[in-house]
Amino acid sequence: MLAGGKALALLAVVAVFMLPLAVIALYGVAAGEAAGPALALVAGYGLYLMVWAALVLAVSTLVRARSAALGVLAACWLAMVLVVPRVGINAASTLVDAPGKIESDLVMLAEERKLGDGHNAADPAFDKLKQDLLDRYGVATVEELPVNFRGVVAGASEEKLTRLLNEYATRRMQAEARQSQVFGAFAIASPTLAVGAASRALAGTDLATHHRFLREAEAVRFGFVQALNDMHATELTYADDSKRSSDPEAEARTRVNAEAWRVLDTFRFAPDAPGDRLSRALLPLTLLAGWLAALAALIAFGARRLQP
Image 1 (cartoon, rainbow, N blue to C red):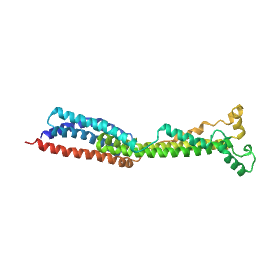
Image 2 (spheres, rainbow, N blue to C red; image 1 turned 90 degrees about the horizontal axis):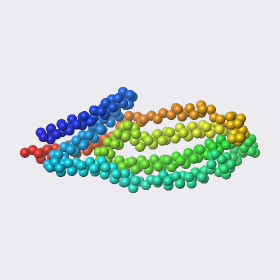
Image 3 (cartoon, one colour; image 1 turned 120 degrees about the vertical axis):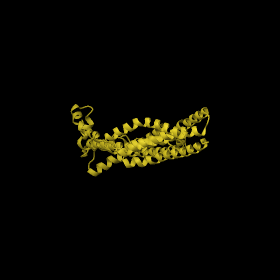
Image 4 (cartoon, rainbow, N blue to C red; image 1 turned 90 degrees about the vertical axis):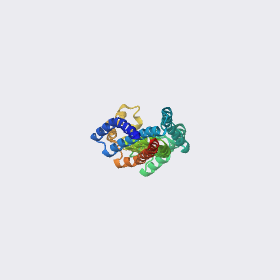
C-alpha cells in the first residue's frame, strides 16, 4: 500500500510535467506536423519521466535511511546525466578516428592545388582542356572558340573541386555516423541519452537528417554555380570577359541578371517521412521501456520487503 501511494504521487508529478509538452505537441499537429512522431515524442518523454519516478520509488523501497537514499539518487543522477554521456563522447572519439579540422584542411588544400585555379584560365593545369577544345572546334586560339574559354575552365574546375570536397565530406560523414553509433550504445546505461536520441530522431534534427540536409544543399549549390558557369561559357564572349575590368561597356554586357539567383529561392528542405523517423526512434524508446520494466521489477522486490 505504501509503495502504491508513493507511485500514485510520483505519477501525478509526471503528469504535471507532461502537460505543457502535450499542449505543444497538439499545437504542432494542428500546424501540420504528423501525429505519429508527435505522439511518440510525448510518449518518449513520458517514459523518461516515469523512469526517474520509478528510480526514486525503487531507491525509497530498497534503502530505508533517508540520507542514504538521497545519496544514492544523487549518485545515480550524476552517473546517468553527467558521467555516462562524457564517457560515451570520449569512447566515440577514441574508437572511431576522425581527423581534426586543421589536419583535414591542410590535406584538402594540398589536393586542391593539384586541380588548378579555376579563376585563372592560364593555369597550366588547364592546358590539356584548352588543347582539347581547340582540336574539337578546329581553331588555333581561344579567341576563335565559339564558347568562352574562361567559363569552360570555371565549370571544369568547379566539377573537379566539388568531387574532391564531396569525397572528404562523405568520409567525414561516415566517421561521424560511426561515432554516433558508439555514443548511442551508451544509452543502455543512461536514459538521458536514450530520450535525447529519440527526441532528435522524431523531431528530425538527428545526425542522419543533418547529413541529408548537407547533401541536398550541396546539390543545389553545385547546380546553381554550374548554371552560372554555363552562362559564363555560352552567353559571355571571351573578348568582353577579358576587358570587363577596364571597359565599362564590356563590364555592363557581362553583368549577370538577378534572375539567375532566383533558383536559390526554390530550395525547400523537407523532413523525413513519419515512418522513417519513428523507425529511427524505436531503439531508444525500447531502451526507455526496458529501463522502466527493470525498475518496476526492483520496486516489486522492494515492496515485498516492506510487507510485515
